Image 1 (cartoon, rainbow, N blue to C red):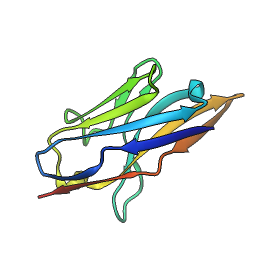
Image 2 (image 1 turned 60 degrees about the vertical axis):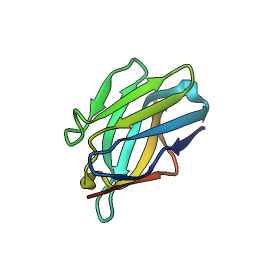
Image 3 (image 1 turned 180 degrees about the vertical axis):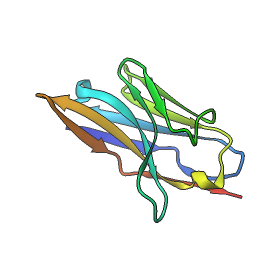
Amino acid sequence: QVQLVESGGGLVQAGGSLRLSCAASGRTFLINTIGWYRQAPGKPRELVASITSGGRTNTAGSVEGRFTISRDNAKNTVSLQMNSLKPEDTAVYYCNAATTLAGRTYDYWGQGTQVTVSS
């Protein structure tokens, strides 16, 4: 089992910045990839950015150049620095951890944190 707790959401004006953090606990040694997804009202959940245990990142095109994901394996945390925020970035942001055990992949999710960007 892996537990994820997000923090750092809030309300910001367009062009502003926010930093999201996610702290993982439990069997964190099983985590391969950890990252952030978001879901806006009426839309499916989508990947924002992820990072592997080896540091390889995957970032959605819509946030490329504005959002940066980083990971501290020693502290079991992952952060998402969001700059130049746009109203379309408004969504609930979820931390996700993918683990592999006995050849099977399991996904864990945080409770979500609201990010609202005003125009």
